[in-house]
Image (cartoon, rainbow, N blue to C red; front, side, top):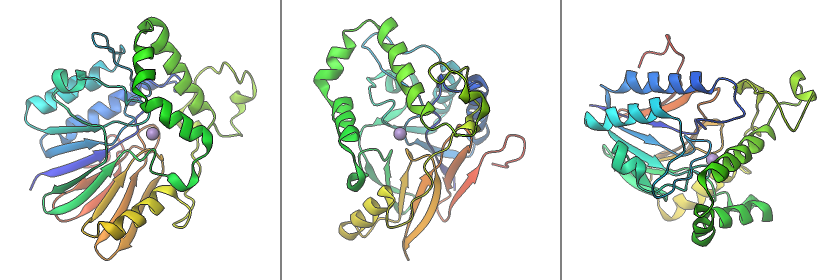
Length: 276
Ligand SMILES: [Mn+2]
């Protein structure tokens, strides 16, 4: 049986990373290596660090990645894209140009006999949301604000967005990175391993785990919850029939999950080593 792959959070084009072209190439190599085995690929959001699409204009860059997606869909592999909080402002470019199916909300899907709940994961962490997170979530999803932003010229708004995304990444820089002690406002560019996420908070505090546990009570047929967004890799048994996977990211962990119809595996992609 053919395999179904899950990846998320590459944050391609991040101005906070020194080697973003290398990162894109690695992702493209991964996609190239799975193209004959894959029945479908689910990308669970934030593959782009900032994507804001106008009716006639898309952000420049990402050509290798977009080309590979088109190649995959041309050859019959299903490619699904769940919008994340860095790339929810999509129109129809990925679908019409690259043949990708774009999902704007969480979906419950039967994939080769098992029930999957798939989502990026932002906005679900409802027990632990500050007013700032709520305000941003509202602003990001507000159609009038989006319309307003789309009246700004791309040459000013897209760089603004990319810089905003860069600074939100720089907040997560490791405190002991020596080069960061220089110019905080204007750093030169960092290796992806210079960043760290808030570590896993445990079953009783981790928002996506709490959300999934709650959701499972009213939707007991779900076998797998798969999320991105959190940038940690987590594989947790919720019940005899249900597991939760948080996918990690594609900046320094290069994690993916694969479903072969019988087992769900989570692994890291190490170029030249990982056998796919
Ligand atoms: Mn995210």
